[in-house]
Image (cartoon, rainbow, N blue to C red; front, side):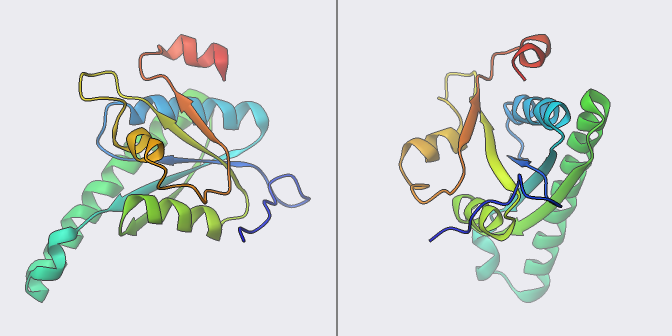
Length: 165
């Protein structure tokens, strides 16, 4: 059974969790989450997941190098989006980097932090479909998710997101 959310209890605040990856739609999700957090007195949690499937088959030194490079890239991406959230809405972001399968790591992070109240995703705008996270959501693999999901249309402009958030 999922833990009860504590985001509205004294000493807690509602957090919006956003997955930071290299998709175009990531920016739309960050923009929405930052604006909503600022307007509701909440916070943003940025989660980057290192999916290093090949690392187990590598020699220890090579595996460590692969992990270090992936972590460095994730930290740079998070710094970029944290700066964007500060500039957009004056919001400071918590940063989490995990290793594993993305759906499992999202679930783990939500379970570990009882202040997380909303998962924010955005749809892709290209011909490839709605994006990997929205596609995974549609597959039903997150059936046990303990928080609501906000899906931001990837084609929205900054001003359109501002009006909605």
